[in-house]
Length: 153
Image 1 (cartoon, rainbow, N blue to C red):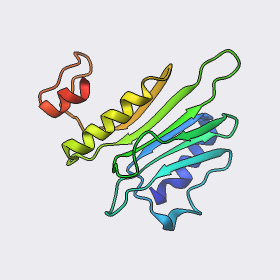
Image 2 (image 1 turned 90 degrees about the vertical axis):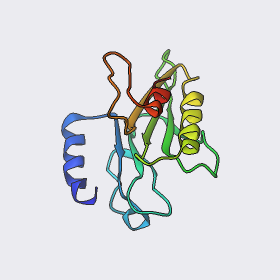
Image 3 (image 1 turned 60 degrees about the vertical axis):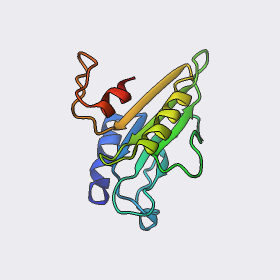
C-alpha cells in the first residue's frame, strides 16, 4: 500500500470519511512512521511470519474508540476489532476489518467465525474486509462451495 498513501490521504480529506478499512496492507515494522494520517487514529494488524496480508483501520479523531481483543494470542486470523462509542443516546458500534486468505485453514476459519460471533453480540456491527469467497451470490444468499456456505451460516 506504500505508494498509495498520498492518494488515500487526499480521498480521506476530500470525502471526510469517519472510518477507512484496508485489507492486504503488506505492512511491517518498516512502515511505522509513514502510514499515520493526520486527523485519524490508526489501528493495524500486520501479517506475521510471511509476506503480504494485514489489515488496518483509520478512525477519525473525533470518534471515541478502543481496540477490542476478540481472539487469543495463538490465533493467526488477520482481523482487528474496534468499538466506537456512540454519540448521546446512540449505542456503541463494533467495527471489524478482516482479511481471509484464499488458502486459510479450517481451524483459522473457525477462529475467525468465533470472533465474528463475539462481535455480533454487540448492538451494532460493521464488518468489512476481503473474505475470498467469490462463489457467494449475495442476492440469493447462496454459495457453490462448502467453505463459502459455512461462511454464510
